[in-house]
Amino acid sequence: MANSFPVPSSWFLRQRVIAEAEAWLATPYHHMARLKGVGCDCLTLLAAVYHAAGVIPAIEIPYYPPDWHLHRGVERYMNGLLAHACEIEEPQPADVALFRFGRCFSHGAVVVEWPRLIHAWHAGGVLRGDATQPLLADRPVRFFSPFFTAEAIRR
Image (cartoon, rainbow, N blue to C red; front, side, top):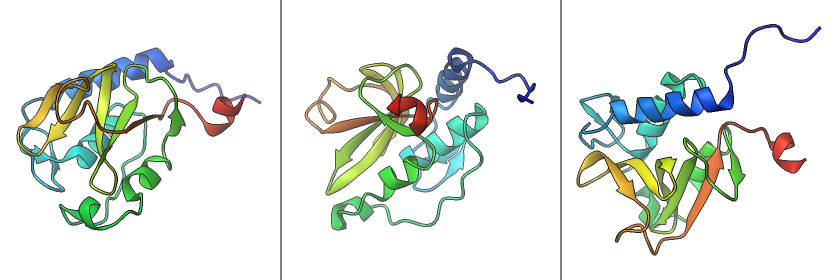
């Protein structure tokens, strides 16, 4: 028998993600913190936003040094993201943009409507951004969606 539990539509969930990300605006940057209005970084922002919106379960994030991406080429951020999202070609609202900083893809953002983003920036906290502006414009970027399964992408 099919599950009769009503599953919110992708559109509804996407709107919840964007609304939750907006609620984090002006939260100061603080490495590994995850408290709205108090502090977060780009990873903990994504974990908190997608969990609060009901898209992913709560995620336990192990300690990582603030400069981990400068010294290792291992795709730790991307590998963790792939446990909850599939890589996609064209981002839709509430998908994730992952930018390369240092030796690997290490800076995540919520896509509002590409190239507009909400992300936690070390020099400004959680803010609205534009991927066509300096500091992001020339960086390699990949996109991920937690709204699709790997099987659905392959079809």
